[in-house]
Image (cartoon, rainbow, N blue to C red; front, side, top):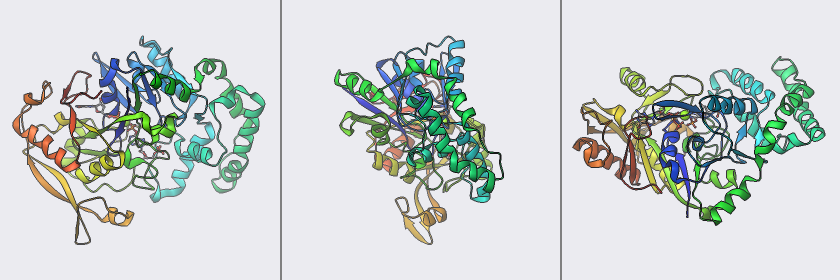
Length: 426
Ligand code: GDP
Ligand code: IMO
Ligand code: MG
C-alpha cells in the first residue's frame, strides 16, 4: 500500500533520521525530497554512529535510497559521503538520483557566504552550503540540473549564463573575484562518469513501485517551521520540507500519501536566527543543550534550546495533516522536578492559543506555561508505554491533547532499538 512521509514538526533536528531508520527493513524505497546537505541526520545502528547529510537514511537498511528532483546536490559532498560509508562496509550501490535534481556549484556556496556577511545583523544564520542560492537559480530558471552534466556544450552555456550577472555582483557589490565558468564546468564534468549510472527518472521509478504495492518512505529534511511558505519567514530554508513537498520533490501525486508522521522533540531546539518564544537563555537552556548533546550535526553550532511549544507543533500537525507523531528525546527530560510546556502566547497583553498570523506578533510572543510533573527514573530501557513512569505517561498524554494528534512512538535514546512503540507506523 503506502506512501509515508516523515516530516519535522519544529525547526529541524527532531530526530527524523532515527525515526526513519526505525521503519527500517519494512520499507522498499527511502526518498529525500527536499533540501540538500544543510541537513544532518544522525543514526546509531549496532553501536555505530552515522551522520548523513545528503543520502536518505534508508542507505543503512535494505531499501532503495532515492534522491528526488526536489533536492539540491553538492556532488563533492555526495561522493565524500558515499566513500565514507563504503569505507565502513555500507553498500551504496542501489542509490538512484533524479535527472531533474539541481546541483550546487562553487558559486552558490560563495554567494551564500557573502550575502550572509553582507546582511550583518539581518543574517539568516544559514548553513553556508549554497542551498538558498541554488534554489534561487532553480526558480530563476538559471539552475544546473543533473542531466545537464551529460551534455558538455549545454552545461558550459548554462554555467556561463548563470555566472553572467553573478560575476558583476561579486566584483562590483561584494568586492570578490569573478568565478571562471569553464573551471566550474570542468569541476562538474569530473564527476560525470561516476554519476551517470545513478541518474534516472526517479518519479517514474517511484510511481511504478507504488503501483506494485511497494512501501515508499519520503524522508523529510529540515521541518515545517523552516518551510519557505509555512515557516518563520525569512528565517527559513529555501525549499518546501512540509509533507506536501514530498509530492513536488519526488514527483508523486497527493493521493499516494497514506500516512504523515510528524517528528517532534520532547522540548524545542533551533539553529540559526529567527523567533523562538520558548527559548531559554539561562542555565536551564544550557542544561538541555548539554543533556541533549544539542550541537549541530552539520555546522557544529550550539543549538538554541527551550521548552516544548505546543502551538508550534499543533500548527505543523494541522498544516501537514499528520496522522501520527513520533516524540523523540523524552529521555533527555529525566530529572526535572516539573516540566514547563507552552500552551499559549501573550502578545501585547492579548492571549493567543494558536500561532500568530504576523511575523511582528511572533517576535513579541511571550510563552504561557503549564507545569507538568517530572520523573527521575531512567527511561532509556523502557520499550512499552506501560514501562514508563506514571508522570512520563501523563506528560505524553497531555502533549497529545495539546497538539491534536496521537503520539505513536517515543524515542528514549539514540539507538535504533531505544524506542517505545504505541501504534505501528506502517
Ligand atoms: P534530524 O536532523 O531530525 O535527523 O535530527 P539530528 O540527527 O540532527 O538530531 C537528533 C539527535 O538526537 C541525533 O544526535 C540523534 O542520534 C539523537 N536522538 C534521536 N532520537 C533520540 C532519542 O530519542 N533520545 C536521545 N537521547 N537521542 C536521540
Ligand atoms: P535537519 O534535516 C536545523 C536552518 C539553518 C538556518 C536556516 C537556513 O538536520 O533537521 P540554509 O542553509 O538551509 O539556507 O539555512 O535553516 N537549517 C536547519 N536547522 N536542521 C536542519 O536540517 C536545517 N537545515 C537548515 O540553520 O537557520
Ligand atoms: Mg539534523
